[in-house]
Structure formats: structure tokens, C-alpha cells
Length: 343
Ligand SMILES: [Zn+2]
Image (tube, rainbow, N blue to C red; front, side, top):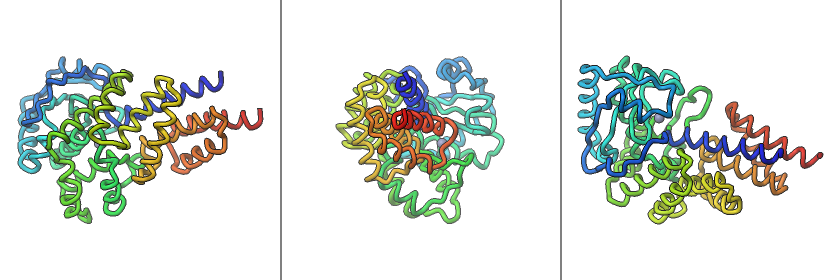
């Protein structure tokens, strides 16, 4: 009984982390809706927006004013001139107007699978509008995290970019990539613009057929995953895997799906492979993706009486000073291990 309830806690934590890291909402999937050959945008009416955001009950949708539409259209035209390939990669996109985005504090914008959400705060600082939009476009352009979790980005982020901790937490690798784009647009001092342009931007703005297909597959897979449609997600991860073998995000996604389906041995094998790639790419363990994998691994180790291994992983996670929910999950697995040591 103890083990079962513990496992439920872990799976819950895993799914929570996935939702946080992908920013994908469980929306209906409309493959046809994305024609990536041109940038086009649509201002969603309040009813369209509330339908697409129905699972985000805390977001209060509202109608656009004509001034706001004009404002945002101008920003988008400027962004298209500055970064045409980033816009091409993002493709067709809908904009939803909400009062605020409560789960992220005073947040100006957020990205879901189909929609970029714009809050009241967006219009309060016009000087930041362009960089805020570019930030959200990075989330869309690298929706599967294929660049954010690559060795190339991690090396750049480690060497060249110093990020402030937000709310006492290190931003995830995906978030760092989007923040870097803000720095690039703003011309921030001490930001290595030359190497960002040379090493990172070409990958973020790659509009080859293969790259667009991979991005699309990973976005769809993450969306299906967040909506708990694991078979469908696994099929999509499998197709993505053919285009990009041994990719951290794919292995991570597959492992979490298998764990949620209680296919334990397959999940363990995938977690093991994912861990090795994480080490190879130097993915920091405070990142939500690595944290989830380590939590799942430590849970399986504990369950299979590999208590030393389990406790070692938990210790390394504790050293990252995790937030409340993660810490509670760590304590829960620790207790299970300790009960096995001293029954
Ligand atoms: Zn972001």
C-alpha cells in the first residue's frame, strides 16, 4: 500500500513537471491548422479563446480592443522584419487576450500548444513588447526542446549567459533560451550576441522540411502527453525518434509515458538511456526534465530494493534546493527507503 501511494505521488509529480516544462495545454489537435509557409496570425474572440483555454480555468479571457489589435499587429510586423525565419518557423498562430496569467505572477504573455496568451501587463510596458513576443516565439519554435536540451545550447548558456534566479529558482533550459532571445532583441550589455547569432540562431530559425516536421511532431507528442493520451504520444515520439535518435526530450517523453502506463521495465530501460544522455549533454539536474527523470529512477530503485542508489539520487536532488512539491516527493520516497532499511 505504501509503495502504491508513493508511486502515485511520483507519477503525479512527473505529469505536473511535464505540464510546467512544455507549457502545453490539452487542446484539440488540428494538424491542418498549421501551414508553416507563411506567418499569419489571428486575434481570437473571447469565446474562441475561452474554448481553447478551457482547462486553464484561472485565466479570465476578454475581448481585444481595436487599439490593442493595432498595437500587436505593428509589433508582429516589426518582428517579422527582424527575424523572418523565426516567424516562418512559428507559422500560423492565434492570440488570446486574458486579464492576467495567475500561475506566473505578473506575467505579460505565455505560450500554449495552439495559442499565445497576452495579458493586461503586456500593454503596460510598450518598450518590452517586441522582446516579450520574441520570447514566446522561441517557445513555439523550439516546442520540443530539441535545441534547449542540446549540448550546443547548454555550452552556450553555461559560458556566456548569466541569468537571474526568478522566484528563487534557476530557470529551466527552455526558459533560458527564450530569455536569451530577449537579451538579443534588447541588445543587452555583456550578452554574447555574436556567438548567439553564429551558433544558436541558425538552429532556432532552421526552416528545412526535416526541422519543421520534427518540431511539429514533438509539439504534438507533448500535447498528447499532457492530455494523458499516452499511446498517441508514444507513436509521435517514435516518429520523431527516427528523425533525431537518442534525443533527451524524446527519451524523457517516452519514459514518462511508459511509467504512466505502468510498463515498468520499459520505463526503467528508457530512464536509464535518458540519464546517460543527460550526463553526456550536461543537462543540469535542477531542470524540470532531469528532476522528473531522477525522481522516477529513484522511485523505481527504491521499489526494487536498490536503496543505496535511490538515496544517492535523492541526495543529489536535495542539493539543488528544490521547491515545495518536489521536496515533498523526495521526502516521500526517502521515507519508503528508510522503512525498508528499518522495518
Ligand atoms: Zn518563457
